[in-house]
Picture 1: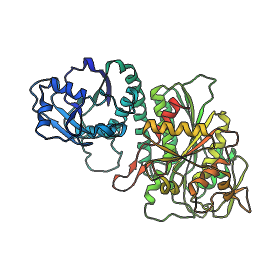
Picture 2: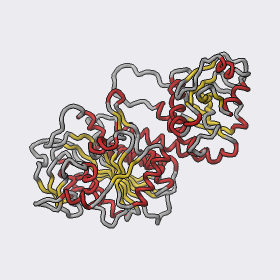
Picture 3: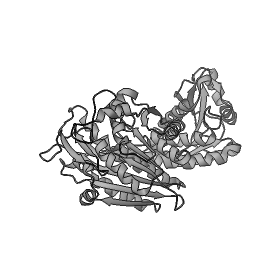
Picture 4: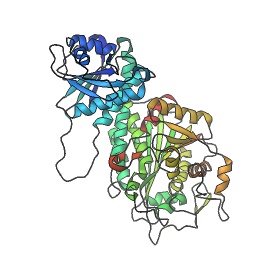
Length: 494
């Protein structure tokens, strides 16, 4: 998909479709008035007849045009003008793209960003448009054997902006292209079944990413090398599986050589049965998404490399399966982490924290200025926040605020949750330095506090994305989150 920023003063080229926003009560925006004049008043005549209400996401094509550069005009509802802002704008772009995807339009020009969008500058208006269009056009990489439906013909979209905002819009176009590419990469990986997307598959995906971008370097450690590092906590999770684990290290170098990197540590459980603490069968198929944290690290680095962002980032991905077998770790077993702490494994289904703690310890060798781990860690965060926010945990107020602010800008929101010694006390064990679970209460918090035990001296945050990284039910699939949040933070707040 190709995008182009077009100055409003020169937006006269021919197009298969001009996209125009209309508020409720048939209120024409300034951009809509301009398109209406060019089309000989076709839009205003239609509105006077009452054929279009302007309700949010409502679409209506105007095809009987007497003149003008557009073969057709697509009216899209913006909702009430009094409540117009980022979300109605994104919904309008998405709805318009879905309509275009069902037609023979190969190109279009959107006027939705030509008028001010409350709460967004031109850069973010264009960036959100690119992301929304790309999300609407994304097709799941399914493995169906039947004939695939034809891909949309839409391949070019011009985004009209006010003339003085063209430079800012160009930056938004660049960032949006990168984030869209990163989200697509995350979705492609996370949507694959567990028998395809194995730890070895992710290792090959890392090498492929490094081949795509000279700014990315990939290193893959096998089980022997992982054991040599002393990652007993990580290896305890993979003991029951015939699929060998991998530790993937992706380095993106876009900043100065001496710039300390940011470390992203992604949970890479390619399938999670729960191990000996076996999960209930309903919904277990969704545990292929348990590597969404790892996939988001792939996505973030793909985005940064596409943008050529001036920052250094290292992605650390411990990846394995969690399976039951005669060799599997048992409840009550005690394992030793890379940091030297001993852990009593009371529940083998609390495995994400066992691989992440060793990943966080490994990140220290890069002397990072900040470490953020990303994981579909707990069902408790879904109970607390649902699917709309991810949970951000950090003892560092500045880092937590920066991540939450990035989530607001990116429309990929995060809600700060507590980390406190009172919760850490619940992880005490009679037999080891700590247990891997506490009670039911505050489960997402105690999970974060477990990781906190391995972060002394680090500026650290944890993102629990169990509710936001994928959808369930009839719309089952990866959402591409939190790639927008991570990239926004790395570009503007890290």
